[in-house]
Image (cartoon, rainbow, N blue to C red; front, side, top):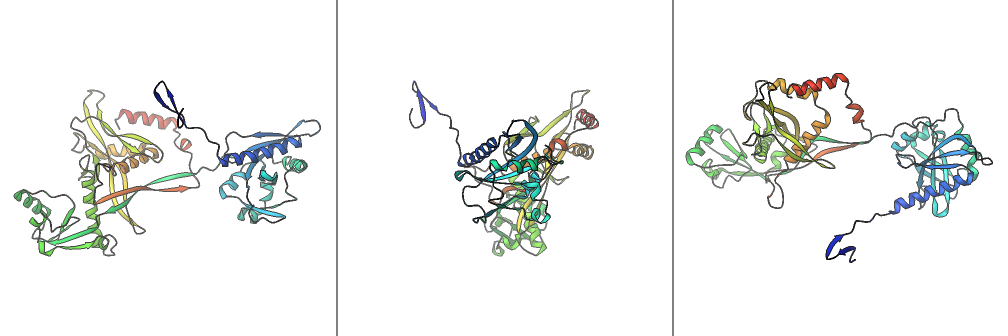
Length: 454
């Protein structure tokens, strides 16, 4: 063995990473051990909970002389604080409960004890949560004041625990823990764009004239430009070739891009957005193209017209999504139409920052290019049955696609770089399994949906 590695007959085998006992886990267990020791010395039973969602265990009270169980249960939440307690004095200290844990402890009809301990000194103190927070003012403050002599938790606390446990309303139901949730929005951060905008005079009036002139002079230009009132506007330096073939080089002016991006002038801000849309087309091409009739962006088929999937990166794991699919007639077996994953795009400025709003949709074609005659009906059907997780996967797929091709070998597209999707952490959430539960009618509809090829 050498440097944590084991060599077997010349073969190097890496050892497994050892499990680690953290200080936090050790400290928490010391608090539990102290509670258990005190409960046992009372002559009662301590039962730890294996999975902690806000309760560490429960005390089952017994008669000290006979050991007979009283059928009285107290739930316990342990908190270990080895350093000085909050607002600590010789006689008292305080503990501030979080809103989430207090709401959880006050649910249901079970009695909950909060035990604060300092195991190194064998100190522990307790309070009955429901009794203490009957006062609305105390509940609003979420603050518990412990009196060290009165609230000491030791074997002599037995009679007080019995008094709490045998109340008529006492039971074992605590209620479900509050579910927190992280929401991923459809707003993709615009991390950066071109630093300058160039404007030049030109004799050309319409884009068609510009394309015709490019064809006549056999020149090719990138997409990042727009033509308006005999002016050419671009993120490219119009003083360079081949732009000098299309505009008056001597008239070229350049501006800091923020003069357009942050302008209060609607025309300037709209010019900036139009340039961003041109950049978006260039960035996505050729795997994704703009569908002019529907004004959206869709995945293109490969030449073999075979269905395919692309990877996407979620918040915690990677996945794949089928973005192009073919549907066949159940009678003839021939392909009737194709479905393309697509999205509608809108650039939004919110609180001084630019975002791309991604609105997932679908495009149906008869040959990979021409729209299906039943586009609106097919889109309406699939949207009717779509669930939130599917829409979420679509947004994640597009967010991943918009960052594609940027690695150590291929530099980022220079005129439009995206960051992350905007997300929000909420203190409350929805049980997705309960929300997504289907009735028999819904199951039947889904079956019909499959038969319809949607």
